[in-house]
Image (cartoon, rainbow, N blue to C red):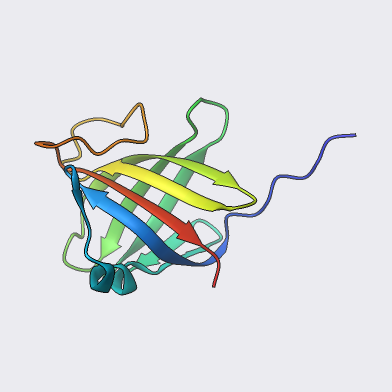
Length: 117
């Protein structure tokens, strides 16, 4: 019998993050709370729609920003959802989807780990 995939919807609290190889300061993590609900998201002052693809590995996610300072952008990402939390890696430049959960120096890759509150 197959086990049910945990739902990605709900509130998520950032517990760790990196941007371009640099760790985010602890005080910055409080601004990265994420709400996912029925194909929409809210992250800080940005909001929009989400498009998930669970049939590829790593699983992919597109953040389509419809409100906030980054309105009009599409941010390609990958994600990993497990019982311990959620990990998201995206390319803030929008150039290409990451193929691994890394944020190397000199890139605009953003890697963040979340847990439920």
